Every structure is written in C-alpha cells, then in structure tokens.
Length: 425
Image (cartoon, rainbow, N blue to C red):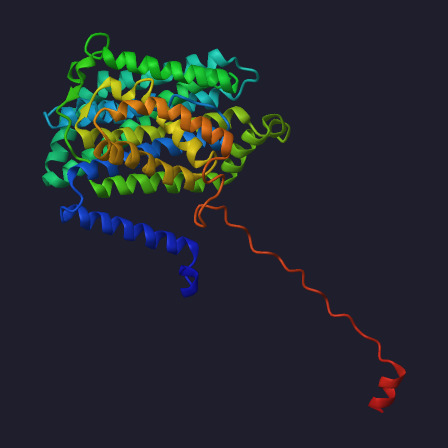
C-alpha cells in the first residue's frame, strides 16, 4: 500500500510502528483500554521478547533449548531487587549489579584473550577461568565499590528531579537484569553447548528447574530475604509503562534483525543448516552457538524486568516447568526461523489464553489448556510442520538484496559495407 506513494519498506515499518504506539497510548490515556487489557498487552510484549530470543537460539541457530524461563526469571528478580531496594533508600543492589557486571565482563574478556593464546584448552578449564573472573568482579563490587561510592551514587541521582531519577534507575535496573542473565547464560553455555541438540535441551530444562528451586529458597539458601522465597516477592514499584514496553520491544526486534543480516548472522544460520560444513568453511561454530545463546538470554532477561515492574509481584511458580513451554509453543506455531510469525503468534497466544478464554469461557476452563497444548501442537506438526508463517518475513525484516549489476556492453565497431560506402559517396 505504501509503495503507491513511493515509501520504502523501512519507512513504512516505522510509520506503522509509530501509529500503533500513538494509538495504544491514546487508548490507555483515555481509559478505553482498562488495566486488565493493558496488562495483557504488556504480557504479550514480554512473552514475545522471550520467544524471539528462543527463536534466535532454536529457529535460527538450531539449538533446542528449554531454558529461556530461567533467564527470564533472573532478569525479573535482579531488576526487581534493584528497584525494591532503591525505593527503600538502599542503592547497594544497583551498584553491585551494574559495577559487578562491568568488572565481570572486563575480566571475562581478558580471560578469553588469554586463553586464545593456547591451543586445545579443555572446556572445563575455560568454564573455571570464566567463573573465577565473574566471581572476582562481583566480589570487588560488593567488598570495595559499594562501600566506596554507594552513598554518592544515591545522592547524585536523588539530586535530580524525582521523575528523572526514577526513569534512570528503572533503565539501569532493566540493563542490569538483562546483563546478569547474559553473564549467567555465557557461563552455563560454555560446558553445556558441547552437548548435542537433544541433550542440550534436557540440560537447559534442568537449569530452569534449578533456578526455580533457588528462587523458592532465596530467603534461606541465598542472602536475599526481601525476595521472600516461596511466599513471593511483593513491594516492587510498578514502573512499567507503554513507552518503556514499546522501546524495549522495538530494541529487541531491531537488534535481532540487524544481527541476522550481518556476517555474524550468516554464520549463526550456517550452524543450523550444516554444522560440519560450517566448520570446514572455517566458522567457529562454538562461538556462534554461544553468541546466539547469550543474545537470546539477554532478550529474556530484559523481558523479565518489564514483566516484574508491571505486575509488582513475583513468585517462583511464574517461572516453573509448565510455563517454560510457552515460548517453544509460540515459535513452533509461528514458524521456526520467522520473526514475523513469532511476533504475531506471541501476542495472539496471550490475547487468546489470558484475554478471550478467561473472559468468555466458563470458570475453570483455563485448566484445560494443558490438555489443549499437546493436541494443538500434534495437529500443527502433522498438518503444517513449518508453522503458520513458515519462514516468511515482512519486507523490513527480510534481508535486503543488493542491486543487480547490469553488465554494460562495449560498443562494437561495424565495418562499412560496399553499398554503405557508395551511399556515402
């Protein structure tokens, strides 16, 4: 439709996105979208961000994973702890997570550069070195940085207007939760990505269960009494707004789109198509697997922060075994290797299950979803195994093709014929 007016795919995508943002914001401000449906929209955006991360890992890189909800939980609890303590005049979580993550990343980068000097370093050795680097970074943040600058950071941010300082703290909380999820996924991926696809999926499922058990015991095994363990964390500031949801969602879409269209994205796709052939072409398949796994986990951690500050309540059962299958169902329905299918199916899935079914079907019907899930998945695998959208992408998300190079033909000198010479004479 936009091509009739000479508008390219990129500009039309931004115009449509801006129109959706303005429309939803106007409807929320006017009260037409009530808090219930606003929660559904925010939840749909969060679960779609998690699903896009899983699609990068499974659909584009070919690594079957069931661990996205573990990183979703890490991002949610880490960001919630930062803001929970901040509103109670305790900046320790903010300082430790931000500066600890920075130091851990610096030390891990140094360790990676050091280990690259040696050939044939064992996987366990890599894991231990990176684990020690991470522990050292957070130890320095807890032991030295927080006592030194914690009060100064709190005073500096509080000197700003309250609305400005709140938005800065919320931004840092989201970044801190996503970064922490990425660091944990990197450490977890070093040894586990050596496994085959099916075994890797079982290992990631075990990771999700471990995270859930730790969250059940945050007030006993872990030194976080404010999380209250199996009772659930309350008192989280409700700072998630539609502009924040839209910005984070668009950031995930753009980062994933640009990554897939880069040379790294081509390498990630090559691992899915034929890992052995990719190795023969000189591609470091282990690095590409870790890259896709870490980026997908960062998306999940960011979504967790958005979800935590929308509900203002967290409970370990939100990140348990059964809910962890939702992203997998979404990407299978939408189509493995299709961002468009994941985005459409993610919002549709939440609108259908949490909106339409709860409002218009008899009470208690929602418990039947665990019977409907496998039946629908079975029908999908039999009738349309490529998913609803297959690998279709809208124009903006497709890889732009380079312009065709038309070979210019050199002019050929034609010798004059005898008749032409006579005519000229």
